[in-house]
Image (cartoon, rainbow, N blue to C red; front, side, top):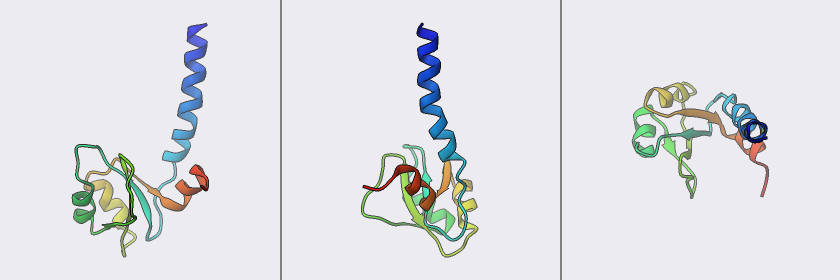
Length: 96
């Protein structure tokens, strides 16, 4: 019984997360950059030639933009765990 519950709980949790993480960044942004809590989001964005935007931040996610489309790859190289297309993330999360 416990094993079935664990499998069900993981399926409900992991399926949306894998769908979200499959949304790769494209174009010139904006993007959602996921950084570890021990890294400075400002520093990661600065190293990649991007800038943080938005009035609020999530604990791990930050909205960023840049003029160059290749900045998404530079964000990953500068230490971001993931760089996702912000429009796709907004569709996934829904509207308030």
